[in-house]
Length: 132
Length: 335
Image (cartoon, rainbow over all chains, first blue to last red; front, side):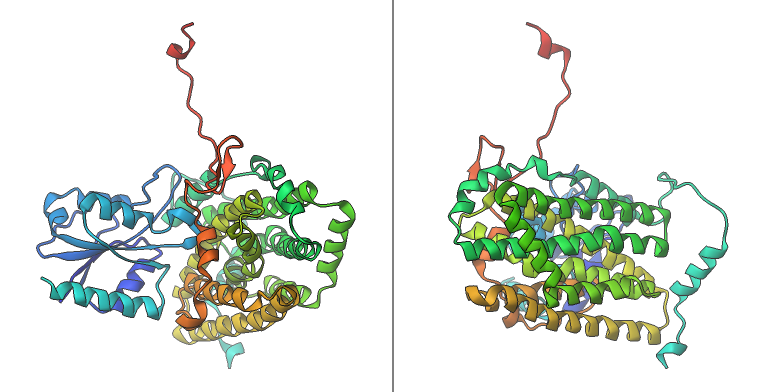
């Protein structure tokens, strides 16, 4: 079964999307000092943030998580959340992680995701996991 | 039955009124990290219409047919009306309901920025249009039944006494009601018309996303403190209000866009954004996937590529960015 590792801040939009997928999921802690290490292949789900200073849009907790080599080695794909109102910054965190980790950007969704997003992601994850 | 339910948010407000201590806001003690995050986001997004070279659109404006010019002016007076409400009533009425003092400060930023948005449309008008035409468009906005109805519905809730309902109204305004208007500049932009105006509208669209996210988030925080029964009542109310506004919005859209054959296209954009407004409130999307498929030309106008359409010399184009500065160093001055 596909595994998910995700980050969600206190607004919990991404958490809500992940819960709808109904797959085993681990949350990257909000406190950047709390570090987790994974032992199995996973797909990363991350929101895109812009705070003006940080151009990447990748939450710092996710950067810290991916800085651990073992975590980086096991990533199989990334799913990004964002808002099309931000124009070409839409889901930018996903594009960046996909490029840096050399994995596919599997899907992009907005806010908490629609029912259509949930079924599309489940389908893609199933297909992908059959290839392992 | 519903009248029997007392909201704990309302109770708290009454207690707040009773307390007499005035506290200074301490930004070194953050209760809710989202307050600081959103404050930073909003202040770093700050812009003024004077930074967008709207005058470059004068030749393009002249290529629009008279009826297309009238449509554009009417759409912009409609947007001006909504921004006026948000700036002078909407964001202000949220302040007394704030859960933290930082939240109050964020609302003052939102309120001011909405006034900047409202003023931006006047910059567009004064750059592109004749005074008599502007006056006609403003008169239209004051006389159009559906536009006035839209304002009336929202204002009713702003003036009501329910903090959660106020936030629902505010989020629906920010994330749904603007979009019948935003459609048009994106449509023109997709046809390489009024591209500088579109740059300005994109800045507004970006701001509205942050406003909708923030007020929607605070709404959800407020909901967490309520009983399941009361939460269910508010949720039903949110969907009802959305549908009431939607019905009116369809009429308003038809008034504007029917003569141009664009109403159906605009509706898809409305459904798509109505779903996003609900999601900002933490509720599930209502409109089915097929009805939310926005014309790809409009979607790509929302997200222009950096290399497309770029007017290097004016510093604008569809990839408009506010200029960055760098402090001067001693080495810069060794002549």
